[in-house]
Length: 114
Image 1 (cartoon, one colour):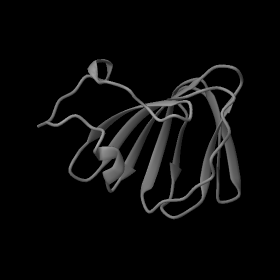
Image 2 (image 1 turned 60 degrees about the horizontal axis):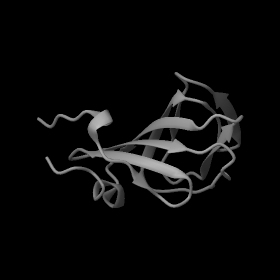
Image 3 (image 1 turned 90 degrees about the vertical axis):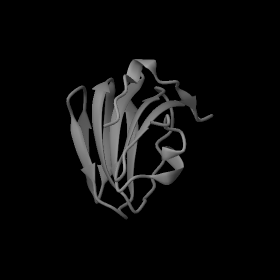
């Protein structure tokens, strides 16, 4: 078993207005990140399935010709290999938790060692 407290993990600044915290399991990656209000959306795709859960702030999520806007409690699932984006709505930073399966090796390198 691995056990962590998000509040005790160091944040990693990405240089583009995001601060990330990462936990790595054997088959998944969990990422908490803050995305600054006013940042530009970054449409992209990747081979991982991704769930994004809004914890604070509001965001518009786009994928496969669909668009939804959610605040806290909103959850979206992005299929693998589909272009998607997240756009912060309003003047409040977005705090989101994201789950990737299988795990994302480049993110897992940021995770604390068990």
